[in-house]
Image (cartoon, rainbow, N blue to C red; front, side, top):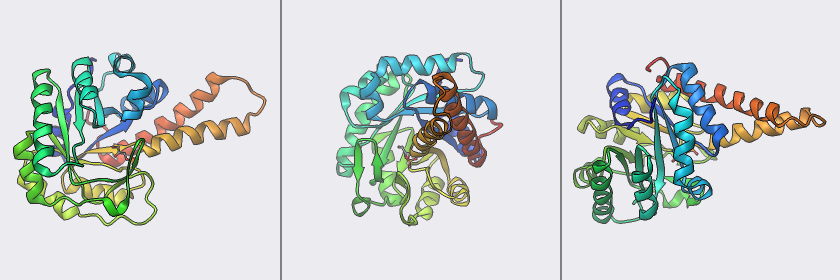
Length: 284
Ligand code: 13P
């Protein structure tokens, strides 16, 4: 089917007590693997791209890749711009076929973040595209965005509600202590803030930094109101480990199709496991 606006799937997830995985693609193989995992698990899914992936391929080619993977699929697939910071790129994504965009204005003070986000919300909504905003600062490394742990800023429920009211975003990433990349130390999560926020609003909540969270923590986050969970680092690790492992055990086989197929299958299995833990399996 055509790419869908993810708002409906995220609202259904909030109401149904599960969350939808938003997986970062890095090329067509990962795009295919994410959609195939969703088909195998009958799960709604979000494809998303970092700024680095957008720089590498351009908006037009990414939209083509996502449409190709989604068009013959019976499950709903959305295409989301992750951590958009460049106003021009966000505009191109909105007009070019993305079905949702994130504006990451977390470096600005709240009123400025909200005002800049509001502008994007108005443009996006005019094109049938939904918007994710961020309040507080998520630590870690997401391709080109590097935030050290001591610069992470936890959101308070009051700030987040004020941001929601001023910005009009459709779904909200509130910084509650999860981080991009592998966790080197046990994260200090503020699940209570997520729970309070979710009680105070219908807005679907987004959790960044899905890689490396134990299953029981993921379930607690979902029970507290998380409706979208981002996974990026684990995609890259499984992809590269799949390639390395196959090459090491097939040093004299020069068959790229077999090599790539091995990595794709590893990705489909790993992403499918996330969908089981997220509870989105069987929801499409
Ligand atoms: P991980 O790389 O930790 O999975 O985080 C992904 C993310 O939140 C992308 O925005």
